[in-house]
Image (cartoon, rainbow, N blue to C red):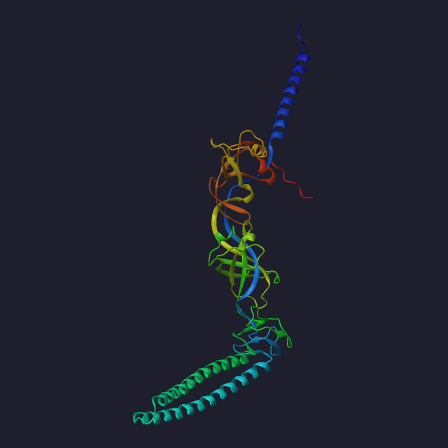
Length: 431
């Protein structure tokens, strides 16, 4: 039976439509099976590696002036913020008791010296008596006993003089101590500077240096040289070196940036949360995060800078120009098996989550790498990284300028498989 021309045309149209439907279905299915990713070309950039840490502004030279003797402050000659000179009188402590001790010590020394003069006279009398006794003893006019008694009397008087001299030395030492305590009732500045902290007022009691914790009356500091003490994380301290440049921002001085240099690096770790003066203990340091104290000396600090202000320092630990760099989030970690193939991260999580697995999975080597785009697929490629900038990381080996790599999203990169088919994620239009 012959098929009409119209029927053949109709069959051809139906075939074309069916074929188009199959193609469209396959295209749609392939499109849906592709992973949406964000892509970027590898470029050369200038990178600056920074270590940031927070701390406190302090003067380079300062001294806490404590009381040397106990008593009541009878006079306070300065106020906080005053500039003082070296040796300037700052305060006076009640000296009544110390003045009395000094007068008593003076009187004791004078009395003992008078006794010494009398003892010296007794020695002279005893010596003359012994000389007379010796002469008559030689003439056999007195017995040996009388001679021996005279000799012993002279030696006793001489020994008494020696004892009095040593006693005078003791009293003079006590007098010097009393005078020293009396002088210490006058508090003077050991350096030129500014009174940055006045902790006591006139009329208050203070405890002297004889105790383990003498009372701090005030702090005098040289504000011409200022520094910032910061606590750097233990993972970053290996990158910090003496002489490195730093940029300091002070919370209270908005918009002000102060240049400085790293001048000191602590050699002992400080358990996080403890002060630098706190001695670490075994119970607090076993698995506790630790910091290291780093000092940044400031250049040309502004006159408005004050000790105790909170500050943040950005230390430049390295600087590279025109290096191959990628966004930090583009570098991921993947496990490679013995054959060098990338292990599916989903399979790793599943096997690691099976506590009763009959055979423990042998873990391969973990490598840093990026996903390079080629012919619509994302292939994992191990890389060697260098310094880390603010948002990008240097690639030393494994990539070339112009390579297309997957940069996101973070959720996608976390589970992206090697050789996965990908498509470009559409950018969301701003409302």
